[in-house]
Image (cartoon, rainbow, N blue to C red; front, side, top):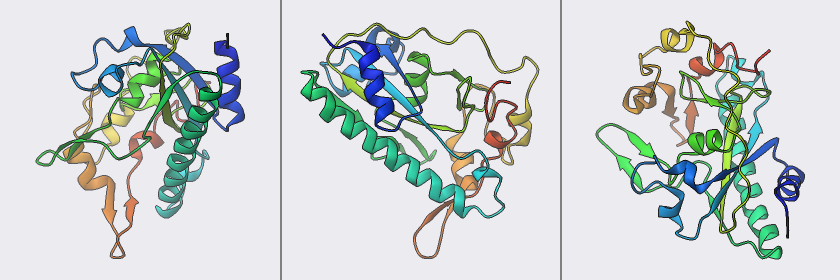
Length: 226
C-alpha cells in the first residue's frame, strides 16, 4: 500500500515546492456546489501543492514580469497536477485534477465575482500548508504569500496533515487593508468587483496585464515568517 510520504515524494519530484493532504471531512463548510465531492463524488482526500514565485518579481516597476511569471506558474501547477494523476493511476489511485486558475463555471457578472470549482486557498489551509491572511491570500510559514496553489482530488483516504495553528497575522496589522487603492479588503474577504477593475487591464493586443499586488507586497510575511 502506497503511503502519504511516498505520494508527497512524487509531487516534490514533479516540481512542487510544498505539498499536503486534506481529508474530505475538512470541507464540510464549503458552499453548496463547491465541496470536492460536488466536483467528483468519489473524492476522499485532496492533495494540495504549492509553487513559489520569485520573491522580487512583484517589486518590478513594470507589471509584465509579474504577469508573465504568474501565467507560467499556473501552467506549471496544472502540469504537475496532470502528471500526478498519471503517476497515481499507476498506483491504482484514481484522481481528478483541479484547474489552477480557469476554467470555472460560477460567474456573477454584476459583481465581477468568480469562484473556482473548489476554493484552492481553503484547500491549502485544510491540507496544513498555511494560514489565510487578512489579505485573503494563503501564507505559508516558510514561503510566505508568494505562492500559487494546485490540487488533485483522489478516491483514496490518506492521513491528513495537521492544520497550521502556530502562527497568524500580527494582531494589529492592517497594512494590506490600508494599502488597497480601492478598499476591496475588509480583513475577511475581498470585493472582486472593486479589485478586478483596478488590478488588471486588457492590453490593446488582448493580453490581461496584472497591475496591482499591493496587498501581497506590503505583507510582513510576504517571504515567510521570520
